[in-house]
Length: 524
Image (cartoon, rainbow, N blue to C red):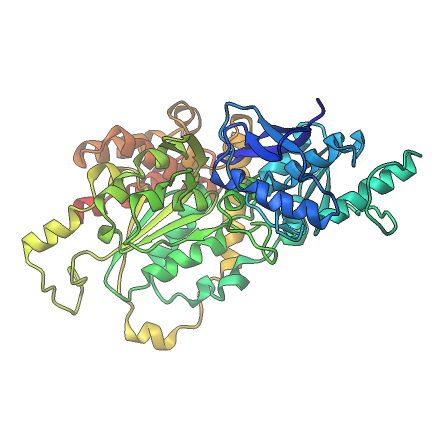
């Protein structure tokens, strides 16, 4: 039996769904089988109304629709359009030329198509199946049109599809296909290039690194974090500029590659966060959830697992302001994702794995009142209150943060005499140069930055001079560092050496990297 081709979603990937239809001369009924959820079961009402709008009367038939593979749960309104087309195909109103294409879309009661989530991974899946084209709702077309190698046809109404395939049949001298009036017309496929979506992130947020007064150590740390993809913690008094530095970090990150943009956009597509005005994620995301967020909101979840904030920050920055105010469960849920760059969400409906290769930036005060160690203001917290506040951040999480830096308050004279430091564009050039060195080194390992180095690659690429080795050994023993902290110091030192254009890691590079691991001894 011929079947209309559609696609389903599993995480950020798609799989083929075949929609079969059987029409029988029996008591009128409409049944959908193949593990449909409530939204799929309700498709029959939308399909019946749309068939009526198309001038097709099927009310005296028993209609049975099968969604294969039958053992896989089908969810959402994505199958409305292929179900309707399968009925028309089985009734002889469409010919089999339609079988070379895939279809997806939600129907209105007037046979118009509404946008659906997950069109980008579906388009990639349709291309992998070797199909000629993919018919999608017009509002989703720009999102799917970025996929090269398959025609994307924007559809506003079911009549557009009927007209298109009537025109195909006419061209093939088989014009006996169903078309309820007018002249058949082809739908033109849509094309989009990656360059059309590129933009300057500096312009988007309206700020630049030259706006930051003082905080030279913190700015240097942000440059290193951007160059190597390292996690960073900023500690300082209220108003010292921690949040501003974090929000400016995306302005010095390297531009996204096409593969990174596709990977990130797939997540946003599945999460229904793309719009007709913003159909593609071409600049690195910056996610800043409030500290009241739950662990599920951070890691992902729901009845049908959806991506959380750590996945929405994929290939970008996840900024957690007021870090100790997050619940301990929310903080600890990030342990494995930080290491593995993936998060697996398991629910009764199944398990889904989402990518989450993000750069974590945390900002926090040194105590509850925020003024412990302040040069002019007195801290009002007791030792016990300060200890209780800082203990909200566990040792294992601190161990996973490569760079810890103190942001000191700015002086009045600096504020009044500030003439502008280095711009984001100048810093970004150094970051880009360091990333190019890393990509050339790690390309064969399919890694993009030093933060992703595995232990074996650390031994291979983080070669120390004799003096640097002695310094690291001394710091390891005096600071009682863990093996993880040792490896993270080497990764940061490797990035510092790359920024300096040095192949070997020398003593100054190790010394600076160790400096960024000392605050946990001061505060924690």
